[in-house]
Image (cartoon, rainbow, N blue to C red; front, side, top):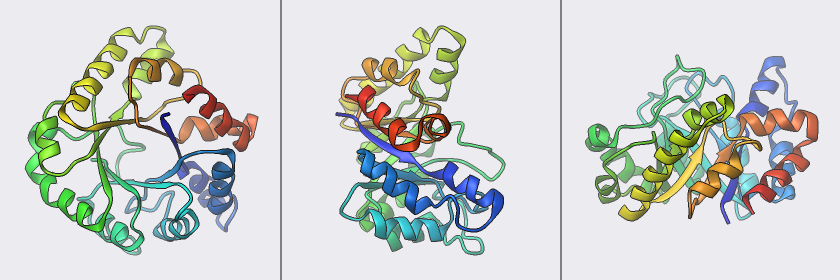
Length: 247
């Protein structure tokens, strides 16, 4: 079964908008785990506009031995203030998986993946560093990506498909072309020896169609839609709804 990893960033956004400790990211994590999710995701950024290094550390202690812990981020973003950098943060908390994403401060959210044919030599030392820590390494990529054999050779174990274009096409009424491109990309990655994750703008409406098109989909990381739906349905009920779709 495809693992559901719930992204908790939006819980932190809501908390940070008011200050203080509510809503509690730890309580949200426990709620998702109790509802049956297989993992939790956070994406700390240097500007700390949502999840903070303190949150990352809190969750590391809470999750250990219970579910997978996936930390997303840009490994090339320099340390700043309380943010020690992605490698140092992962060295400290030792997540199950690190997902490398080429985002910058100017982006509201991640909107593209690495180009493995151009970025492979730049990625090589950071992938080695994360593997030495003991993290499974996944790299965020776009549909149509190439260079999977080279990625495997430097130690990458998974890709995460950036599914924003699929979600937009689905919303607009015809996702067939996008779905075919993602299915082809996933198939080529798997043939090269990489496992395939997916995430970004996946929702209860579009997830089932996507999963059906991607045999062997290892993991989906879902935050924005899931937390939005949870405002109306409740967090536990929403997590269970996603699990039913994935089953």
